[in-house]
Structures are given as structure tokens and as C-alpha cells.
Image (cartoon, rainbow, N blue to C red; front, side):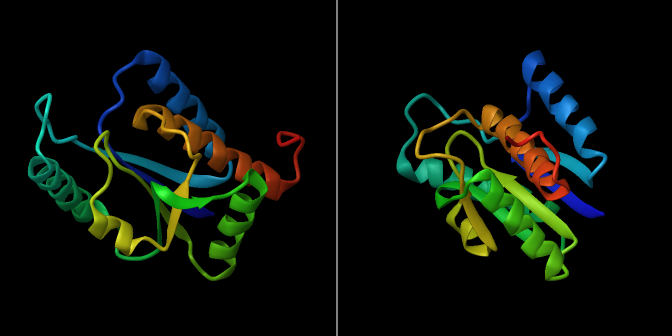
Length: 160
């Protein structure tokens, strides 16, 4: 059974997000061992300078790096990443498993983005869409896509 880590900058606060996260965590328990970890998002003022944003991203990256597993694949969600269809994501997850990668870590940055050094470490940079989504919603969308990928692999009717 694959181990899937979801490492997120920022905490879910809204009930509808936490309920959706719990539902997908329950569904995924049949297919993988899921662990969701959060690191605090660095607080910035209303009009931060580029240097302040860079410092914030670096501080968030330090917190993320402290939680990254020593082994496995790192998949960073970022706008410049590859867009994959649901079947292509399922195939990519199978490729990782077939290559002996039993642990996958998906990384979602905060509202200001992700430090370049984290992106550079990623085995796969993944984009969900050319559109911009709140990072909290992206977390739920990612959990659904991971669940869908396992359903595709299992050959169920979930993915039509």
C-alpha cells in the first residue's frame, strides 16, 4: 500500500473544507496510507515588498523541509507545473509505484506561492489548471484527484 503525504502551507479553517478533507481521507483509506500535515503560513501585511515575500516563502520552505520524508517522490503543485489529465495522473502514480516509490509527498504552498528551492527538489511539478484557485480549495481538489487516480487504477466506474 502506497503512503501518501499531503504537506500544506496554511490551515483549513472553514467547516466545508474540513468536512470535504475528512470525506476524501476516509475514501482514500482503502487505497493508501494518507497523512496530512500543515505548516503555518507566514503572515504578511497588505502590501508586502518582493523582499518580504521572498523572506516569507523562505521561512515557509524551512518549515516544509523539516517535515519532508527522507525517501519517496516529491510532487509540488505550482502554476508552472505540468497539467495532467486524470488518467495521466493515475498512470504517473502507477509509474512511481512500479519504480519502487512507495511514498508520495504532495506539496501545496501558501497563498503567496512556493519557494523556488522546494520546486527545484520536486520529482514532478504539477499544475491543476492555468486558472488560479485558493490553496485551500486546491487541497480538496487534489485529494479528489488522488482518489480518482486510485479508482482509475482499480477499474471502477467512478471515472466516467
